[in-house]
Image (cartoon, rainbow, N blue to C red; front, side, top):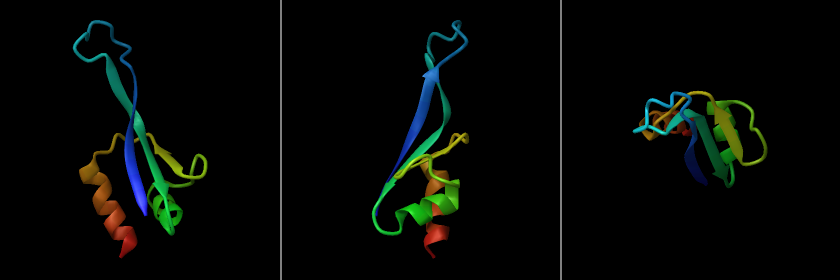
Length: 73
């Protein structure tokens, strides 16, 4: 099973914040392998397409790993 978290970065709508040109707008979770789809969909809901889930939440690795661990128990 292979998984990855990818932040969805979009242009910052506030042009006065030059030090922060992008902001997070959700999290993509990509997966591959036996049982990965069931695990991902148990955490994030239905896949956008095979191998990809998306959530509007801005999640860190430290928030995702416990969710994966709980589902795999």
